[in-house]
Image 1 (cartoon, rainbow, N blue to C red):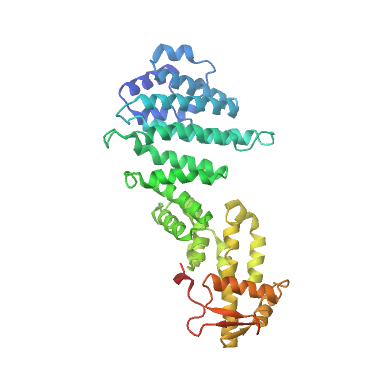
Image 2: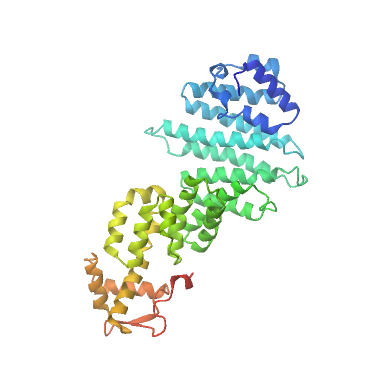
Length: 398
């Protein structure tokens, strides 16, 4: 966009509003569009000039937008957020009043995205302030829910005019907020709304990938690894091959889920997406090398915690126990394995504080989870394993 005066900008906004060109209006109300960087748009009191060119209701939207640009130019993100919130709420009323038409959905997408991004900036600006962290993002989520309700309630419009086609974009914005403020339970009704939507397959592929990425992550936190695998795999396979950053993000969650289900990722894939720390972990688990596993958990602790996968990765230790005990079984070549032999292996690999009772407890958990077929003879302090397939493949358990 070449430089243009505010008057010319307002004339174009009026023209596109009259012709119901939602995509064009959306760019002119975006905080990320080129015009937002020009100083002549940073107007503290734009009401006078706006009233000369624009009619109701678009005039109110543009006034709030220009005031928001001014607040951003002053680095006052709290005021900018409040203005963007008012702008979004005003637009929600306009959207609700537009019966049997959805041409303004692109405007909604832009306003809601900018609202979330501003909420994050406002949160960052007040770090160290005594107020409740995440409060601004929570308020932003309430604002987004207002738009979502309008879209979800549009049941009577024809398929080509329905606002319900805008639901998924809002759900994805809400997911990003809820994951950031750690309120994953609020995702459940949104997932239900999308899964029961007749437009489930009509949403754009990019929106579906984002949706499945978040639903997959939530399923992972809920220990529903089959669902997590299904959704994250869809997201990874359908994500554009040039979106390396996004594919890496998906893999960070998909790899531990796949491993918990018994699938081993290839070294090439992990190195391609710069996830060598996960490959080291894969090797430690496959070898049953508990010392290497513990060392890696300590070494990459910050990375795992930052990604939110520390507890999930820690669950892989039970598979490392299973693989170690399988090695002991193969070395001894007997179906009656002394618990003492298992404990010796554990101590050798750095688990020095594990006694016989704890070793039995680990074995009992493995038997309960179906990772070992057999039973513990407490009287003889032996683990009696099945003569047929005592260590069933993990993939057969999922």
